[in-house]
Image (cartoon, rainbow over all chains, first blue to last red; front, side, top):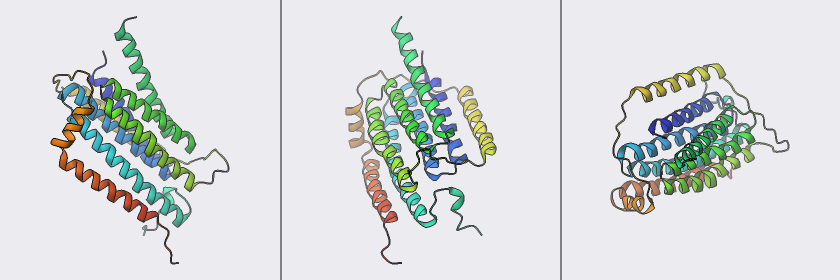
Amino acid sequence: MIGLDHYLLVSALLFSLGIMGVLTRKNAVNVLMGIELILNSANLNLVAFSRFSAGNLTGQVFAVFVIIIAAAEAAVALAIVLSMYRLVKSVNLDRADSLKG
Amino acid sequence: MDANFVQQAIWYFFAALTVLSAAVVVFSRSLIHSAFSLLFTFFGVAALYVMLGADFLAATQLVIYVGGILVLLLFGVMLTHKLYNLDLRTETFQFFPGLLVTSAVFLTLGGVMLRTEWHRGPERAPAPTTAQIGELFMRDYILPFEIASVFLLVALIGAAMIVRRRETQ
């Protein structure tokens, strides 16, 4: 039978893959995709605990708030990526070094 | 074949779809492949929500992530790259340090997961959740709900302000 541990394992895998994407990709849009993976894995954990441990819907309500934050984050982050593209004509993160001493 | 076996097979299929497409998102060299693979990841997570009995969240996941965030990301790809050639190669850096940190994170999470005695409460029977979630939003979580709506408005206005073209210069 599929239990809590199965969901936690899938969530841990998604989280690690998201960390990998954030750390190793040069393209800013790819880094955003990694962040979306991390938020999805956290959501999966919340819903799994709501199903197996809590017996109520609080985890799902929190997951809705996480989705709201993710939508706002994606909009603002893409705005920043677009203005960076306008500034340095590239979205590679190693080009964003104007604050480097 | 009994129903239990079929349910498990379906679960493993969607779990594998989620994790494998997430791996394609992270490791693919082509930006377009990553973006479209993210579609399957979001879809797989929505299917896992359905199997957890979270029908409202599964619909929300499809509408907001697939209909909103993914389209936004694709706009980001198309506005910042010249789409004359469809293979948008992207580079990676810090590959082996990143792999090291990632394995450390995964082993830590896995160790914690295996060693902890999780609290097993009463399992919630699968039942429609939409009405209950709406009641929770309007009763127990009314303040966070209102704050979230104002926050979303402020974030979207802020995003529009950031990308606005300056008239001077």
